[in-house]
Length: 126
Image (cartoon, rainbow, N blue to C red; front, side, top):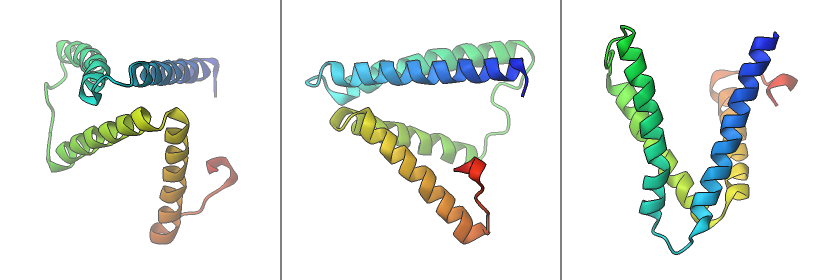
């Protein structure tokens, strides 16, 4: 691990923390505001930044859509549904509940990896 790697990790952590704070603020700011309006407010930023990233990538010579198959489309739909379910959890229960759910998901994934694939879990993975 070098200084550049640590700086990248710091930027990622700060962006994730800022995103979580903003999401919490939007989701619980106006509890009477419809969930669809709040989701639209949150997802517009994702569309804008991903659109900028895509435009820059295409201008540098990348293929516009690449090799998009069933797995890629399935992943997009899965993560869209996952994001909407997380927004419902945030709206109704808050960020602490979401943190516990994410922790449980990580533990369940580890258990499935051990049971189905014979993976070993080390101290670094806990």
